[in-house]
Image (tube, rainbow, N blue to C red; front, top):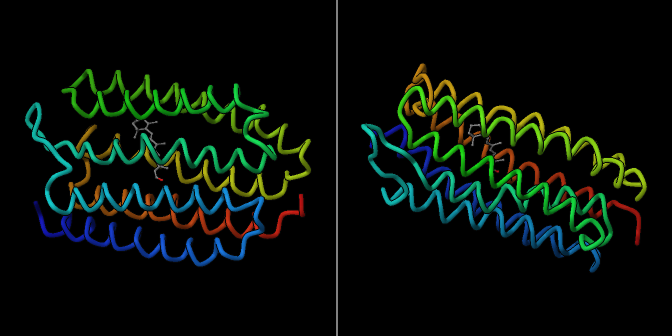
Length: 225
Ligand code: RET
C-alpha cells in the first residue's frame, strides 16, 4: 500500500474515534427525547472507525479482476448511510414508526445503491459503468424521497429549517461520491489511488462527523416536544 493511502486510513480511524468522543460529550446535553440523535451519530462513527482501522491494517481490501478493491468502504457505507438517512428522518417525525414505510423505501434504495456500487467496483469495463448507472438511479430515488415526501413530513412537524439545512448538506456531500468513484480506480482511473483515498477521507469525515455535529446541534435547539 502506498504511504499516502496508508496515511489517509490512519487519519480516518483517528478522526472517527475523535468524532465518537465529541458525540458522546455533546449527547449528554441533549434532552432525553432527542438522545436518539446521539445514538445514531455515535453508531455511525464507530462503524466507520472499524472499517478504517481494518483498511489501515490491510484487512479491508482484496485484489480482484486485476485491481485493488477496498470493500471495507462499502461495508462502512452499507451500514452508515441508512443510519444517516434515519437521522435526517428524525427531523421529519417525532417517532420513526410513523414514517416506517417511507423510511423502509429510503433505506432499501440506499442499500441497493451501495451494493450495486460494490458490484461495479468488482467489475471490469464496460460492466463497471453499467453498475455505476444502476447505482445512480437508486441514488436519484433516495434524493427524490428526501426532497419530496420526507421534506413534507418535516414541514408538518414544524422542523423545516433544520431539515432543509441537513438535507442540503447531505445532498451536496453525497453527490461527490459517484464523481470520485467515476474518476477513481473503480471508473476511468484519472486520479491516483492516493488522491482517491484523500478525497473519500474528506467526504467521509464531513458526511459523518460534520453532519453529526450539525444534527446534534439542531436536535438540541429544536423545540421541546
Ligand atoms: C457509489 C457507486 C457509484 C454510484 C453511486 C455511489 C454512491 C455513493 C454514496 C455514498 C455515500 C457515502 C457516505 C458515507 C459516509 O458517511 C456507491 C460510489 C451513486 C452516495 C455518505
